[in-house]
Amino acid sequence: MVGAVPWYDDIVQGPIRMVDGCWQLPQAPGLGIEVDERVAAKHPFKQEPFTSRDAVLPDGTVVDW
Image (tube, rainbow, N blue to C red; front, side):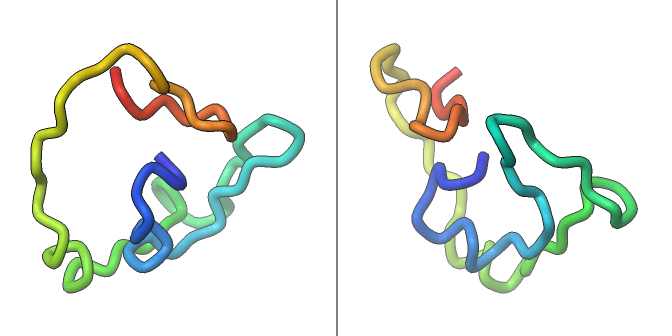
């Protein structure tokens, strides 16, 4: 969910990129990303209210499903 939260790039390091509207396949094992768990711990899960409007970001990311 690239861009769904302003601190995403602080936590997720990796090559997942969108080019011409398509997500590129990573070359690294698994999802091809590294997660900084210390930074992630600063952002514990907090349920957001479900809404049906604005569920898709300009880059195509679905943020409310």
